[in-house]
Image (cartoon, rainbow, N blue to C red; front, side, top):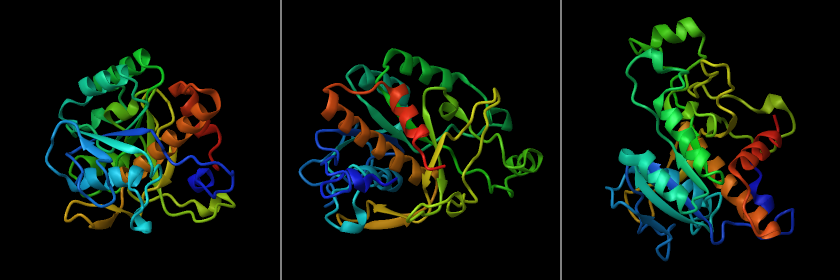
Length: 280
Protein backbone atom coordinates (compact mmCIF):
# COMPACT_ATOMS: atom_id res chain seq x y z
CA UNK A 1 0.00 0.00 0.00
CA UNK A 2 3.04 2.28 0.47
CA UNK A 3 1.29 3.97 3.39
CA UNK A 4 4.70 4.52 5.00
CA UNK A 5 5.21 7.48 2.66
CA UNK A 6 2.50 9.31 4.62
CA UNK A 7 4.06 8.76 8.04
CA UNK A 8 6.36 11.08 9.93
CA UNK A 9 9.80 10.59 8.36
CA UNK A 10 8.25 9.18 5.18
CA UNK A 11 8.91 10.14 1.57
CA UNK A 12 6.22 12.84 1.44
CA UNK A 13 7.51 14.80 4.42
CA UNK A 14 4.14 14.86 6.19
CA UNK A 15 2.77 13.33 9.39
CA UNK A 16 -0.38 11.36 8.54
CA UNK A 17 -0.66 8.32 10.84
CA UNK A 18 -4.35 8.27 11.77
CA UNK A 19 -4.28 10.95 14.46
CA UNK A 20 -7.82 11.85 15.67
CA UNK A 21 -9.37 9.35 13.26
CA UNK A 22 -11.63 6.42 14.20
CA UNK A 23 -11.74 3.06 12.43
CA UNK A 24 -14.99 1.14 12.86
CA UNK A 25 -14.94 -2.65 12.68
CA UNK A 26 -17.89 -5.03 12.47
CA UNK A 27 -16.80 -8.63 12.99
CA UNK A 28 -17.51 -11.85 14.87
CA UNK A 29 -16.92 -10.26 18.27
CA UNK A 30 -14.60 -7.87 20.05
CA UNK A 31 -10.82 -7.42 20.00
CA UNK A 32 -8.92 -7.80 23.28
CA UNK A 33 -9.13 -4.14 24.27
CA UNK A 34 -6.45 -4.57 26.97
CA UNK A 35 -3.83 -5.69 24.44
CA UNK A 36 -0.62 -3.67 24.71
CA UNK A 37 -1.09 -2.63 21.07
CA UNK A 38 -4.27 -0.81 22.10
CA UNK A 39 -2.97 1.50 24.87
CA UNK A 40 -4.94 4.21 26.69
CA UNK A 41 -8.38 2.89 25.74
CA UNK A 42 -7.42 3.09 22.07
CA UNK A 43 -9.99 0.43 21.09
CA UNK A 44 -13.51 0.34 22.50
CA UNK A 45 -16.00 -2.53 22.24
CA UNK A 46 -19.19 -0.53 21.84
CA UNK A 47 -21.63 -3.42 22.18
CA UNK A 48 -19.59 -5.39 24.75
CA UNK A 49 -19.33 -8.47 22.53
CA UNK A 50 -17.23 -11.48 23.54
CA UNK A 51 -13.59 -11.42 22.51
CA UNK A 52 -12.95 -12.94 19.10
CA UNK A 53 -9.63 -13.88 17.49
CA UNK A 54 -10.67 -12.82 14.01
CA UNK A 55 -11.93 -9.43 15.16
CA UNK A 56 -8.72 -8.82 17.11
CA UNK A 57 -6.55 -9.59 14.08
CA UNK A 58 -8.59 -7.30 11.85
CA UNK A 59 -8.56 -4.38 14.31
CA UNK A 60 -4.82 -4.73 14.86
CA UNK A 61 -4.15 -4.55 11.14
CA UNK A 62 -5.78 -1.13 11.09
CA UNK A 63 -4.82 0.54 14.39
CA UNK A 64 -2.24 -1.51 16.37
CA UNK A 65 0.14 1.03 17.87
CA UNK A 66 3.39 -0.72 16.99
CA UNK A 67 4.71 -1.30 20.50
CA UNK A 68 5.90 -4.50 18.86
CA UNK A 69 7.07 -2.91 15.62
CA UNK A 70 6.14 -5.96 13.55
CA UNK A 71 2.48 -5.51 14.57
CA UNK A 72 2.08 -1.83 13.68
CA UNK A 73 -1.23 -1.11 11.97
CA UNK A 74 -1.71 0.90 8.79
CA UNK A 75 -3.31 3.86 10.62
CA UNK A 76 -1.50 3.21 13.89
CA UNK A 77 -2.34 6.51 15.61
CA UNK A 78 -6.07 6.08 14.99
CA UNK A 79 -8.48 4.66 17.52
CA UNK A 80 -10.89 1.78 16.97
CA UNK A 81 -14.59 1.16 17.60
CA UNK A 82 -15.82 -2.43 17.54
CA UNK A 83 -19.23 -4.06 17.03
CA UNK A 84 -20.19 -7.66 16.41
CA UNK A 85 -22.01 -8.39 13.17
CA UNK A 86 -25.39 -9.37 14.61
CA UNK A 87 -27.09 -6.03 13.97
CA UNK A 88 -24.66 -4.59 11.46
CA UNK A 89 -26.86 -2.67 9.03
CA UNK A 90 -28.82 -0.90 11.76
CA UNK A 91 -25.66 0.00 13.66
CA UNK A 92 -23.93 1.14 10.47
CA UNK A 93 -26.88 3.41 9.72
CA UNK A 94 -26.65 4.98 13.17
CA UNK A 95 -22.89 5.50 13.09
CA UNK A 96 -22.89 6.79 9.51
CA UNK A 97 -25.49 9.40 10.40
CA UNK A 98 -23.20 10.49 13.25
CA UNK A 99 -20.20 11.03 10.96
CA UNK A 100 -18.47 7.65 10.62
CA UNK A 101 -16.12 7.74 7.62
CA UNK A 102 -14.64 4.24 7.23
CA UNK A 103 -15.60 0.78 8.45
CA UNK A 104 -14.29 -2.73 7.84
CA UNK A 105 -16.34 -5.89 7.30
CA UNK A 106 -14.25 -9.06 7.06
CA UNK A 107 -17.22 -11.43 6.92
CA UNK A 108 -19.89 -12.40 4.46
CA UNK A 109 -23.42 -13.63 4.01
CA UNK A 110 -24.16 -17.17 5.17
CA UNK A 111 -24.05 -19.62 2.28
CA UNK A 112 -27.48 -21.01 1.45
CA UNK A 113 -27.18 -21.89 -2.21
CA UNK A 114 -25.08 -20.93 -5.20
CA UNK A 115 -27.80 -18.56 -6.46
CA UNK A 116 -26.45 -15.93 -4.03
CA UNK A 117 -23.10 -15.73 -5.84
CA UNK A 118 -22.98 -12.51 -7.83
CA UNK A 119 -26.50 -11.51 -6.87
CA UNK A 120 -27.46 -7.94 -6.04
CA UNK A 121 -29.55 -9.12 -3.09
CA UNK A 122 -31.48 -7.34 -0.36
CA UNK A 123 -28.40 -6.88 1.84
CA UNK A 124 -26.48 -5.23 -1.00
CA UNK A 125 -29.44 -2.96 -1.68
CA UNK A 126 -29.81 -2.11 2.02
CA UNK A 127 -26.16 -1.11 2.19
CA UNK A 128 -26.53 1.10 -0.89
CA UNK A 129 -29.45 2.80 0.85
CA UNK A 130 -27.12 3.56 3.78
CA UNK A 131 -24.47 4.91 1.40
CA UNK A 132 -27.01 7.10 -0.38
CA UNK A 133 -27.98 8.74 2.90
CA UNK A 134 -24.39 9.03 4.19
CA UNK A 135 -22.32 10.19 1.19
CA UNK A 136 -19.06 10.56 3.17
CA UNK A 137 -19.13 6.99 4.50
CA UNK A 138 -17.12 4.21 2.83
CA UNK A 139 -17.46 0.61 4.00
CA UNK A 140 -14.63 -1.77 3.07
CA UNK A 141 -15.38 -5.49 2.85
CA UNK A 142 -13.55 -8.77 2.26
CA UNK A 143 -14.31 -10.50 -1.04
CA UNK A 144 -14.48 -14.00 0.48
CA UNK A 145 -12.33 -17.12 0.27
CA UNK A 146 -14.35 -19.56 -1.83
CA UNK A 147 -12.14 -20.06 -4.89
CA UNK A 148 -10.50 -23.25 -3.62
CA UNK A 149 -13.55 -24.87 -2.00
CA UNK A 150 -13.54 -27.75 -4.48
CA UNK A 151 -14.46 -30.30 -1.81
CA UNK A 152 -17.65 -28.48 -0.83
CA UNK A 153 -20.60 -30.49 -2.23
CA UNK A 154 -22.34 -27.37 -3.55
CA UNK A 155 -19.52 -24.92 -4.21
CA UNK A 156 -17.20 -27.50 -5.79
CA UNK A 157 -19.37 -28.21 -8.86
CA UNK A 158 -20.13 -24.49 -9.16
CA UNK A 159 -16.39 -23.73 -9.27
CA UNK A 160 -15.99 -26.21 -12.07
CA UNK A 161 -18.86 -24.65 -13.97
CA UNK A 162 -17.78 -21.04 -13.50
CA UNK A 163 -14.00 -21.47 -13.56
CA UNK A 164 -13.60 -19.67 -10.26
CA UNK A 165 -15.58 -16.58 -11.28
CA UNK A 166 -18.85 -15.08 -10.01
CA UNK A 167 -18.20 -15.86 -6.32
CA UNK A 168 -18.96 -12.57 -4.54
CA UNK A 169 -22.05 -12.60 -2.34
CA UNK A 170 -24.14 -10.43 -0.05
CA UNK A 171 -23.30 -6.87 0.93
CA UNK A 172 -20.00 -7.16 -0.97
CA UNK A 173 -21.99 -6.89 -4.22
CA UNK A 174 -23.22 -3.41 -3.29
CA UNK A 175 -22.36 -0.65 -5.73
CA UNK A 176 -21.04 1.79 -3.14
CA UNK A 177 -18.97 -0.57 -1.00
CA UNK A 178 -15.26 -1.26 -1.63
CA UNK A 179 -14.67 -5.01 -1.95
CA UNK A 180 -11.13 -6.27 -1.40
CA UNK A 181 -9.31 -9.35 -2.69
CA UNK A 182 -6.09 -10.88 -1.36
CA UNK A 183 -2.72 -11.15 -3.09
CA UNK A 184 0.68 -12.25 -1.78
CA UNK A 185 3.28 -9.88 -0.38
CA UNK A 186 4.65 -7.30 -2.85
CA UNK A 187 7.70 -5.79 -1.19
CA UNK A 188 8.69 -3.31 -3.91
CA UNK A 189 6.34 -3.03 -6.85
CA UNK A 190 7.94 -2.53 -10.26
CA UNK A 191 5.77 -4.58 -12.63
CA UNK A 192 2.55 -6.64 -12.79
CA UNK A 193 4.41 -9.97 -12.72
CA UNK A 194 5.21 -9.37 -9.03
CA UNK A 195 1.53 -9.39 -8.05
CA UNK A 196 0.45 -12.97 -7.38
CA UNK A 197 -3.18 -13.75 -6.69
CA UNK A 198 -3.79 -16.12 -3.79
CA UNK A 199 -5.53 -19.41 -4.49
CA UNK A 200 -8.45 -18.69 -2.16
CA UNK A 201 -9.47 -15.10 -2.94
CA UNK A 202 -12.96 -14.93 -4.50
CA UNK A 203 -13.46 -13.38 -7.92
CA UNK A 204 -16.41 -11.61 -9.47
CA UNK A 205 -17.88 -10.24 -11.61
CA UNK A 206 -21.36 -9.58 -10.27
CA UNK A 207 -24.36 -10.98 -12.09
CA UNK A 208 -25.00 -7.51 -13.58
CA UNK A 209 -21.44 -7.32 -14.91
CA UNK A 210 -19.66 -5.05 -12.40
CA UNK A 211 -16.02 -5.67 -11.43
CA UNK A 212 -15.58 -7.28 -8.02
CA UNK A 213 -13.36 -7.16 -6.08
CA UNK A 214 -12.41 -3.62 -7.05
CA UNK A 215 -9.00 -3.63 -5.33
CA UNK A 216 -6.50 -6.11 -3.88
CA UNK A 217 -3.76 -5.95 -1.27
CA UNK A 218 -1.73 -8.33 0.86
CA UNK A 219 -3.89 -11.01 2.46
CA UNK A 220 -1.40 -13.85 2.90
CA UNK A 221 1.00 -14.08 5.83
CA UNK A 222 -0.46 -11.09 7.68
CA UNK A 223 0.77 -10.70 11.26
CA UNK A 224 -1.50 -9.00 13.80
CA UNK A 225 -2.93 -9.01 17.32
CA UNK A 226 -4.94 -11.86 18.88
CA UNK A 227 -6.86 -12.45 22.14
CA UNK A 228 -4.72 -15.10 23.86
CA UNK A 229 -2.86 -12.54 26.00
CA UNK A 230 -2.11 -8.84 26.12
CA UNK A 231 0.94 -9.38 23.90
CA UNK A 232 -0.22 -12.25 21.66
CA UNK A 233 -0.19 -12.25 17.88
CA UNK A 234 -0.64 -14.61 14.94
CA UNK A 235 0.01 -14.79 11.22
CA UNK A 236 -3.16 -15.47 9.21
CA UNK A 237 -4.34 -15.41 5.63
CA UNK A 238 -7.58 -14.57 3.87
CA UNK A 239 -9.39 -11.69 2.27
CA UNK A 240 -10.33 -10.90 5.87
CA UNK A 241 -6.70 -9.90 6.37
CA UNK A 242 -6.55 -7.83 3.17
CA UNK A 243 -9.69 -5.76 3.74
CA UNK A 244 -8.48 -3.98 6.92
CA UNK A 245 -5.28 -3.01 5.12
CA UNK A 246 -7.37 -1.08 2.60
CA UNK A 247 -9.61 0.33 5.34
CA UNK A 248 -6.51 1.70 7.06
CA UNK A 249 -5.38 3.37 3.84
CA UNK A 250 -8.84 4.89 3.33
CA UNK A 251 -8.71 6.38 6.83
CA UNK A 252 -5.27 7.89 6.19
CA UNK A 253 -6.39 9.43 2.88
CA UNK A 254 -9.38 11.03 4.59
CA UNK A 255 -7.11 12.42 7.29
CA UNK A 256 -4.73 13.88 4.71
CA UNK A 257 -7.50 15.39 2.61
CA UNK A 258 -9.00 16.99 5.70
CA UNK A 259 -5.62 18.42 6.72
CA UNK A 260 -5.45 20.20 3.34
CA UNK A 261 -9.09 21.22 2.89
CA UNK A 262 -10.67 21.21 6.36
CA UNK A 263 -13.40 18.91 5.04
CA UNK A 264 -13.53 15.20 4.23
CA UNK A 265 -13.93 13.58 0.81
CA UNK A 266 -17.16 12.04 -0.28
CA UNK A 267 -16.93 8.25 -0.24
CA UNK A 268 -17.27 8.07 -4.03
CA UNK A 269 -14.24 10.35 -4.38
CA UNK A 270 -12.25 8.28 -1.89
CA UNK A 271 -13.13 5.02 -3.62
CA UNK A 272 -12.25 6.46 -7.02
CA UNK A 273 -8.96 7.84 -5.72
CA UNK A 274 -7.93 4.42 -4.38
CA UNK A 275 -8.92 2.57 -7.56
CA UNK A 276 -7.45 4.98 -10.09
CA UNK A 277 -4.09 5.31 -8.34
CA UNK A 278 -3.56 1.56 -7.89
CA UNK A 279 -0.36 0.11 -9.33
CA UNK A 280 -2.22 -2.40 -11.50
